Image (cartoon, rainbow, N blue to C red; front, top):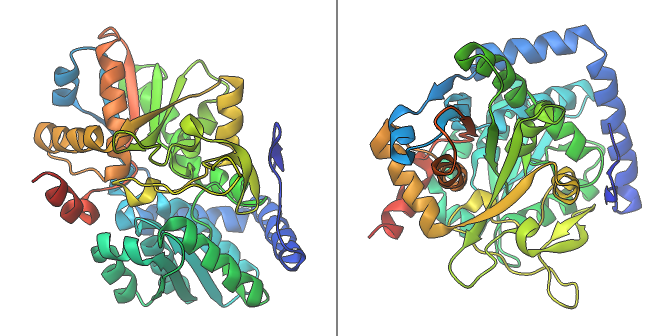
Length: 385
């Protein structure tokens, strides 16, 4: 597990958390070598999660683009409706392996909270989820799901009352209850070993893309596209493709015209946030800047350190897509393919269609459809009036 990606990553945390992070890294290193752990992870990924998820040819969306073929990696069909299941299952099994009875998590769009609540229920772990009040209001269906699954949802009323503030609250809880509690961090951010750990559990996405692309069209795709907030579905898509010739495109939230949205890689600069050194949206004095996005899951002022390194080295490109364009892509996929995407991957869909128009019909683009859109219907309907 790399502690750093070039200059990025590291672990900038209070001393009280160092033993817990060391314990977590040791547990994961041990689990990776344990055939019984790997079998249980694979069994539950299949029987509870529904893996492998299919690779789908979006024929009518491809016709709309008029260029390269567009294929969708259907993580929206995974149990709980998003890629968040992959990481929640892995860390849930590690929590049980460490003998800790309690899980806490943060959530923005609510998908990670739902996945954590489900895993907590399935594994018999007490579960509490921190969620900003703003996100609670715009993601009410997922709040109801978490509660029905037995989790306690704790509103966060500080700061902007969104994802960043939920992470702050969860970290404070963990510092207080570190002996009995595991913090199931939902994205590839935070102090080591979380970025590497989350990327490892999410890499099942990219591994399946490699296998399924060869079966579907005889080779790897020319371009892989994924949305980037903290960056877990994107790094899960990209990491197994890093040593290939596949182009990689990460798509951030551009927000409304005239704003930086939540595009840390496009508009931020290196700094420390939540225990890690990476690209961060900040003002001239180094204070964390406010963010805004129509998508709760992308509304975060930082990004995983591996993405920062991929940007600097040029191995991946990163662009920002505005709210209005993500909404357009949402409606395109709904009307062309009968699929309601979450607003997070709608950003990636717009960028993918833009790329497809510039490329010949012989090329193949795979977009990771990281979640389904039922959680976003109220937001979409309000914005579409």
